[in-house]
Length: 289
Image (tube, rainbow, N blue to C red; front, side, top):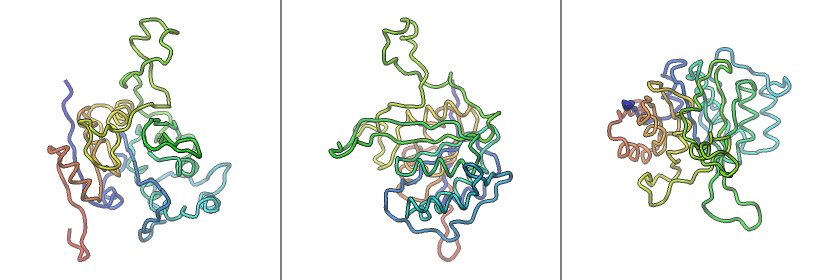
């Protein structure tokens, strides 16, 4: 029987909170940031200040320097500095916190996934890229003048391509799309998932639903956590939202650290996980926590 893991919730800015955590202390880090939907967000002060990462590679695709690459990408996206000025230091902080056998998952939509792939290759090195996962679903409005957008992208990077932990035998199996083409034994067992995951969104009337607008299904996080961590490992979620990462990680015997600066998210997580320990690290204008 699995002993449930611990959960600690931090109420505060994730960049400030994670700055106080020790190097290489998490086997699995998951980032599900606000998607860049075209709405400008306020750019934080010194947003372009890079977090020092020992051994970080700065050469981009075909040896181009990273800053030159940023400049070229600005040509294609006039919101580039605003969004990536916010996200880049958080990615670098996540890389610092990732253990040598650890895995980083970045969850984005179609607007930013291609920019993210190029930039993360430049930041961390193309040889650290492991997978592009596609989460596909069939729900929501139907487009009439283009193909309906029914997927999100999860980019997967590993700290050390020779040492990262991955256990495919621990994840749930899927039905074969053509069970008649395999033996009855294989059909009954199911197949290992590929890099395309068909999974419904959180049902509107299901027991899993918290009401938080960007809640992700437990099935998606369960597969990630089962594959890329072990019982007793530590898992970090930079943008915890409804707390799905923590709820799933604890049930699987992992120890979760969740960070969010939205009071609504904190309230949802406290109701969902009453056993969690809460740390409030917001700082008032007067400098008092």
